Image (cartoon, rainbow, N blue to C red; front, top):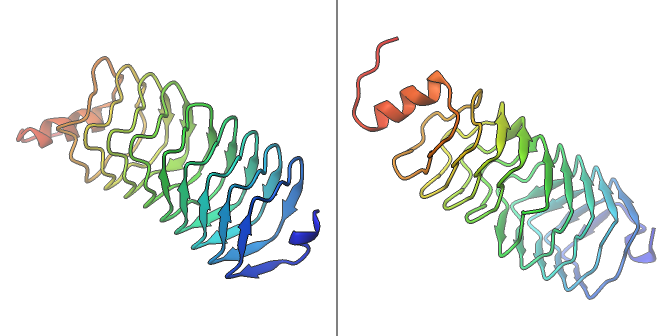
Length: 203
């Protein structure tokens, strides 16, 4: 562990231009901290908590986040190439100008997260909670989703074209502007689509 993170709790700190590659960070809590132009490539964060923190221009290339929480954080212009989120909690966090194309997400709670324009195309996503997330214009084309929860998510102009979206929860959503061309859907979603277009379904 590098000297700057020898403790278990950091509050109201600013971390600028730090380079900490190939490191292991465990059981550390950061509250109201800011990170700018730092390099954490190929490091591991295990059971860490970031609460109301901001990240700008960070290199998280190849980073593994294991059971780590980002609570009400702002994450902007960060490189996530090859990053892995294993059973993490991102509740209330907002991503802007971050590329998810090569990110791996294994389960976790992504509820109330800002993910508009996020690229989840061709991903395998299981047991991810996207409830109440902002997924406007998000791209799930050709993805395979299982047991994901999209309850009350904002999906305006999102695309699931060619995706396999059977066995997921889509309660309380407005699906009228969602692109479902060639998507594989189940009966529950078919009913939701029909009801959004004014049909009365009896089953």
